[in-house]
Image 1 (cartoon, rainbow, N blue to C red):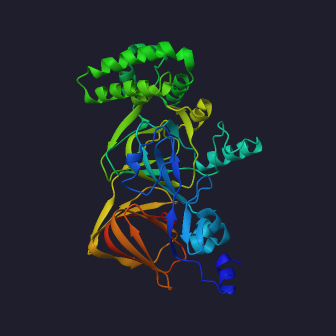
Image 2: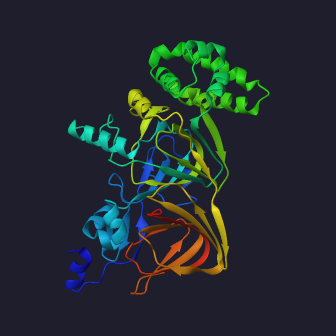
Image 3: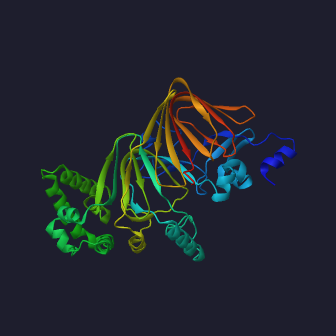
Length: 417
């Protein structure tokens, strides 16, 4: 029997359709608290700066719903009444909330990393479970059995490295000496995979001489007439100062450097090596925390696993939203190729009212500017959603009404067709 029916039999109020979220904070050395606070409520504890605020039900850090009888973890509520919170279709098609929504701010570069496919995630998770590796162990790679396609949308000017440059461009940036050091003379995917394995397998004292050669090459690139070469050389030297003796310093010579303006999006599929360098973003992904790291980190690195999962031909996709002008303002839809999520931005004019709609599944709403009033359900539920606050909309809700003015981000399940 569902928790909703249990409550109604006891004469209690039925489960709500909407509730404010209390979201967990992740603090890491690369974070940037001033890059987080303009967009979402967060409170830093002593230690590292705030790097991410999670909105969702991932078991490592679930949000809480603010209910009449106190705050409850979203993952527990979904387990108790999945059809209410997720809606019938999503409850039957997924094991829980299919997406995870984040605000992320990078003050320094994140680790060079990639994400597994669904099959690779399932196999890797089951293997580590059988080996008895605790989820919190530093050497644990797979935190869950899900893949992690992800969409990043810039809130501020944002820089990332993602996807390999062409083989001739990599060779050109490396220069003759480094190409010779790594015997880089082939151009196929397997040769690129072997090159990555050779670069990221050199650690500690063995890396010192190579690091000096790389520094000299970066300095030469800084003197180039090419803006592309100067940008790559400058980033190499920045990474050398931040991550000494780390082969991730080669990233800018191997990967595309992408600069996004606010509102532009970047979709990263499985197998794409990438690193977010600086800036604030909204990030929405399948509900997973699976990361295979190559460098620019003190965390666990598994070069062999990374090279097995690496897809040298895969590339990220720049996503520019489809914008529709409406009587109340505009709706911008980020059409990412993922069934787990869809992201929309609603820009509502002064005292506007969004056309009422029936949710197709659970939603998370985040207000980053202005303020809104959200009404939902047959019980006349209503809540205020000021700037930097977020709320959860149950998938079983029959209708949602949004009134106010400002910017509202809406995450829903993707197209299930």
